[in-house]
Image 1 (cartoon, one colour):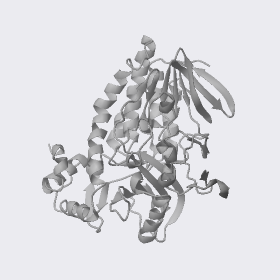
Image 2: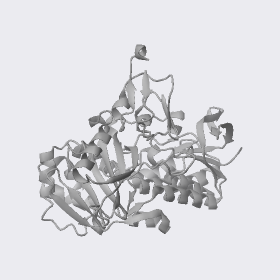
Image 3: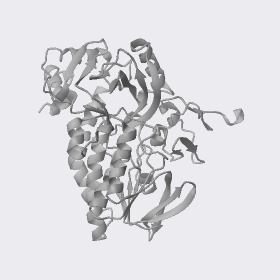
Image 4: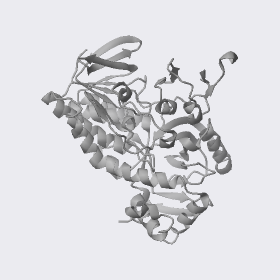
Length: 391
Length: 60
């Protein structure tokens, strides 16, 4: 088999690469190791409404619910309410990832990309010391796909980068380890996303509840890897469930790992680019990765189309991708990495004081960034290290 | 050796992401461990479900 571009992984990152590159005229094959795209889910499914709509025209079937706002809870229970456009930058739509991911893959297919499911990449093919394709297995049958360019959109457990000599291994302090229940409970607020902070609730992370409609919600937890121990996320989530939703029905259990490393040193090698969670492009504060993945996917698809026609796929030539994503998505996650590094070390007492300082503030139009600025202004001493973000 | 309790595993791949030896691979719902495992234990601490454990060889 031969093509211009092999994309490994049919999540939002890979599908946007495949869609963009196919539309630009490349012959694209996109591989998905799972037999069903998008399933099993390992995501809280919250996404910025505006952010998503800028990148794609969302099909109504992708959206499980729309949040009107968000509530933040301090360790002592203090409640901060943010209405639509505040946390709306981070959440707004709560997706049905199983439908959404398949929908994006379908868009890629309709642009001409060949989607291959239950097909796992096993390694890189090489010619003259440079990658020349992918060695794969499709429903148990070995397969060689020759292509001058390979894009690794293979998620948190990415292998493509490692095969190409890029060290993508995450340090425990740079990954949030997560568990999630899809719950149904009469006390679920169908209109609000909720975030619960505290070192006893979720060390170095938070508990979230994102509405999915009809009194259902994704109730999940992220614990910083370096503060976690075997099975801790699941145990703490069970405890939270017992305390807050004792009567809830649990309809699904999910697990996940979310990169919170900020930008990694490199995401390109000769003939190889990484996108999405594989490139550790998720937001170190929120853990959100869908929008960043899609943005980087579009950039990678455009660069792929240009460079394949130029027949120049050296690491140097692919620097265009590196520069473009770092200038956009990268700036944001780099800044938020600094904030995360600071916040994960705060005590409950400090978190409480920060949240109290927000109580009298008008957060009606504030984004997460604005909220941070207010926090720094209100707590200059505690947040001295973050003062550069106040401007 | 590293053991995988497949009845606990949530096949999320978090363990694969922290493995410094590239010894783990997640294939759909199946976690594979290869001979490159150095038994560093990083994955056992990271596993959100508590499915990974290092056990002494003789216990096998």
